[in-house]
Structure formats: structure tokens, C-alpha cells
Amino acid sequence: MSPLVIHVLLFLVGSLAIVGLGSCYADAEDGPALRNFPRRFGFFVGGCTVLALIMLLVEQVFASVR
Image (cartoon, rainbow, N blue to C red; front, side, top):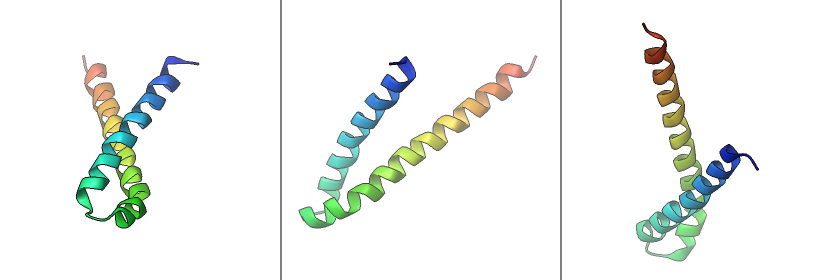
């Protein structure tokens, strides 16, 4: 397996733990926490993806300026 795939999988495992604990602490009952988990997970991973893309774009812009 390539290092990129391993890092993405490790990020997703860590994200499961972060979002899972956040969902449990945000909702008093288990039912709403489980129902909101996929939406929260999607927002977290999507937000991290957007942030990573912005950082790569900024890196390209400033690294190419001489």
C-alpha cells in the first residue's frame, strides 16, 4: 500500500474517534447522536479536505513566486 493511502486511512480512523466522541458529548441521548453521526463525519472530513486544498493552493502560489 502506498504511504498516501495509509495516511488517509489513519486520518479517517482518527476522524471516527473525534467525531464519535463529539457526537456523544453533544447529544444527551444515544439515538440523536447516532443519527447525526454521518452528517457530522461528512462535515468534518469535508472541512479538513477543503482546508488541505487551500493550504496546497497557497503553497503553490507562494512557492512559485521568485
